[in-house]
Image 1: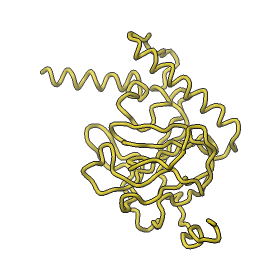
Image 2: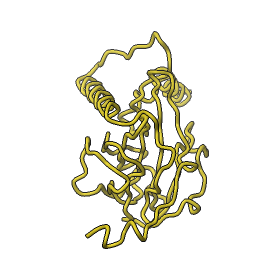
Image 3: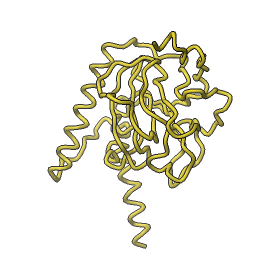
Image 4: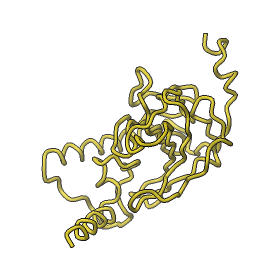
Length: 227
């Protein structure tokens, strides 16, 4: 009975607070905030840690708006393959597949040897660099149209990568790994795409596979391009 009560309480938190309430657990995209209800307001922080967490997310939301002002309004319709050497045809479509608990797979897994370079699939800005229970070491890039690109399970970050950094499809973000809840699986990049916000009732999880296009890796990695 206690287990059922705990499980119901956790589900109720998700329904009332949305993913923002799960920020400290490392959920993929907690920024958008909450389920869409016009009368909802977050509870007052009860501890100093909760107050700092609230301030941290307020700062991230402010940064997001500043990036959007500098980016095109329309999202990209083609995304460059982010994993060095990989081809789109090699990606097995697992978007929406069931995951543990109530989750579904909010992205695509691109398998590659540990340490394979991961590049930005689009232009934009590095919005967040962090570590979560699910995604392990991750990088969020915000691109045109406010779409947010989630690169997770990284083994390590690119040297010198910083939040606020402007990126292009030539920017190295990190290296393939299996951190977070992927530690029992072969190394891979989890690549997710998010749009909109629960605060404005247009939050969406987007399947990146139909948008991915192959790179000419031979040309991309040629000495002439990288003297």
